[in-house]
Length: 372
Ligand SMILES: [Fe+2]
Image (cartoon, rainbow, N blue to C red; front, side, top):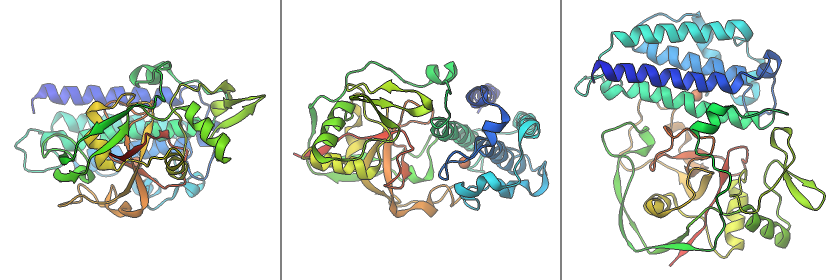
């Protein structure tokens, strides 16, 4: 990779950091340190974790340098420290946190200047700049979990950088009954060998699908309200009553629910129940990926699939087991697509997100499928 590519990485790192800092810019230290929910980290933990992960990979691993703050890293290990205890850890806070982030970044850029990230480099971590792409994706993905937490902060306004870099569009019409037919046949699933992707997106392999149909657009609020009215199902997270109508109460607002927008903040359990009520089912993740080029309304909500988060044939953990492998099994369900809070750099056709079936803090909706 040329020095121009190194410059492009530096530029992308800086853009990601601007986005991260813009998210927390309106908040005082009290709010950054506050625990809002046992299933979401305090924002100060996310910030320190973003910087510590960067130090671990781009400064210590690539640059061979010693840690800046001794043993601090263990409090930012996501597996060792479950979300519900993160508010009590002796993590960096306030001015100390901000200066740590800046110190790490300075060292990262220093190391980047002397590193070879060409296509022929032997170390797979550096080849084609993999580790830098991984770190960019990591920071941008944490932006989305931070936005999940920010839904709980009264009066919080989304910064312009997030609105403009996301594909949030307020006024599309959703919820038509139209379905797209996909014929039976072989479909290539997963990421190609070259180019950045996570270990769980490989190996690319062929899957035989029987004919099916899938909704052209995600399920709308209006359709979900009909489902609730007929079955007594629970509303999505953050919905409240405002007189006769439903209102969105996220971020302390009371905005009327637009029946034409895609439903968001539903759990897998809710999504699955909706699909059954509609006489349909959730698509498998392979059906979703095979149909994706023909789908409208992508990039508004993550879309639940019926699939468990399992390894593809030939899976090899890279660069560490804790990214994917420890989550494989029937406990987690796969989501595909990407939401308004997902940076376009993160969303790819082969990207696999996952969460527990009862969780609704993520920006998730659904579209339905059925056998043809
Ligand atoms: Fe992380």
